[in-house]
Image (cartoon, rainbow, N blue to C red; front, side, top):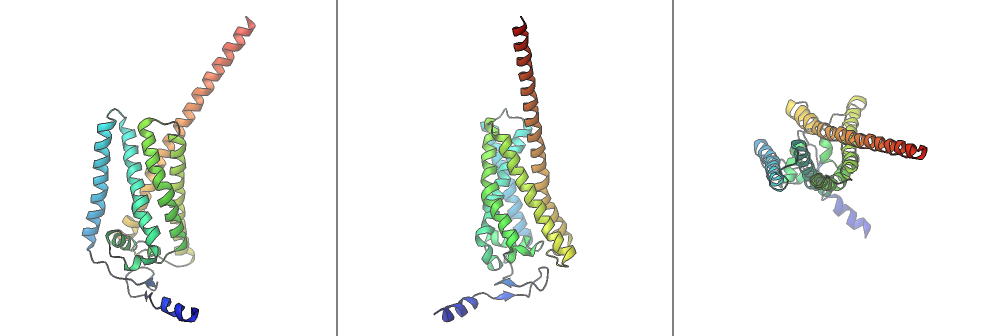
Length: 247
């Protein structure tokens, strides 16, 4: 029975090599050209980012109007980052096997982004594992930390450090694996045009180095300051206790 079923499974996946992705010879299963234009897709994506910003800013100003601007900015970033991780990257994790033929909104957005990294159309093991961890670990934790910011929760900074280190570490590996293949294997996954390499691949990902880096530094300083203050209090108590014993 296996000899009958296996050929039927193999014929359902066509490996397409006629495309504009790099490397040009890479085979993309069941690839279909996007139906929507690039301006339309980018407008939808950045429009969604703007909508998240406005909704988050409005809600925070209503529910927590006296929060410092830096904390409001942190909440906005965490909500945006969590939404992109959980929904957009989560979509890729769950649908990686059919990215080449996908014609829904997220599918076409990923195919547009894939001009900067074709690994997203070939179920690359590293990219798939990295995106899965990002989507279903860092995504939900971003929302948790955002909630903790509003209540000044004691675990806010420890969890924020974990999330930020995870995001930065994942980004470093993402860049490193691509650059390794480029310089040592002679394989380029990104088209050379400015839009694809410098804007999609470099800039749009480097944002997850900048904002998590700022939050990481902030959390480390806050925790260091708290321990310094605690140490001063303990020393003062010890000194007062020693003085009372002498009396």
